[in-house]
Length: 409
Ligand code: CNA
Image (tube, rainbow, N blue to C red; front, side):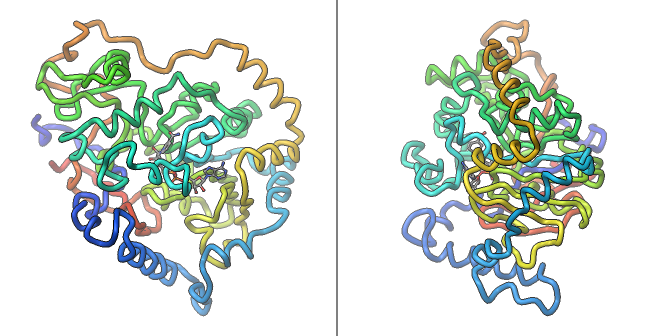
């Protein structure tokens, strides 16, 4: 494909640290993928990050950041935010969601010790956790990702209370947008309309050749993957992949709504995410400093690991579903939630896979251009630039986000 003829489009890629392309280095760094040396690097990177971000004269490094942050967590923060909502002060709520939102639906997250996918890698036979979303690794061996895809494909899981709470924010006219890193489609399934939803890491709703990007019927890709077959592009014979965004691939154009939404937000709710993946980790810093940020998670993450918290920051640590139920109660939404869930759960939920394209089942849609692919993508190692105007952080597994004004590869 001749990329130079394409008009410049802004790009942000899902983080793909240099280290991701060097699994050997990871494996060398200790006994197994999470060896001691690597752990140490992480801690020092985090410490450096914290020292760079800390306010002058304030020592953030004397204590473990998480422990300190927990101490400074505003007890009653949930009630304070509920009060603001009830006073009508939060009418443009932005939600940032991660895998912890769906654990109550029976889908494991990545990083929870014991149950997270990263703790169960033997199932996927991969050398290091992020290989499962590494496009080069996929190119050589798609099976690990396809095994995971079989578990995540929409259809076998139902939205839970937390998804419906986000939907209720919409029903109440308060939701500006939900930015989810999840690929399970449960936000859509619980009835959050498309225009309120940014599935930043893509979804299984469409599929395309991972090499030439030619669209492929999503239902056919699903059938193949569920039957342990590899869907093949008949145009170039490479492997077809659901349009889930891998490391180094561009996020959907819809993601750029964040540049309008975050400055406009009057409440940011961050739920069920470790904020380890860029650009999300930095995105939460792009609301105005006076805007309340509410973290609902099992543990402190991202900027909430740093003390002191912003004055408008609140976090409520614990089981997410339990916390969200309490939040709904404080808001006086119990009855509405019950009714919404009852009405939705009795509906037969629609399928999330788009209808097969009208082409031969085994062939790609057309020769040449990647028609119909929602996500324009680049390979790892493409041009990197500044993230979307936010503070930059460096995380253990993932590198900075990148945006550029032109296609570069
Ligand atoms: P992560 O790194 O696994 O972090 C999840 C966070 O949620 C952790 O901080 C957990 O402590 C917290 N958490 C999990 N369960 C609960 C609970 N019941 N109550 C409170 N807190 C809880 O996942 P992220 O979303 O931060 O990472 C982004 C990745 C994960 C995205 O690229 C996703 O594609 C990917 N992922 C998605 C799914 C899904 O679609 N359901 C599942 C697994 C991984």
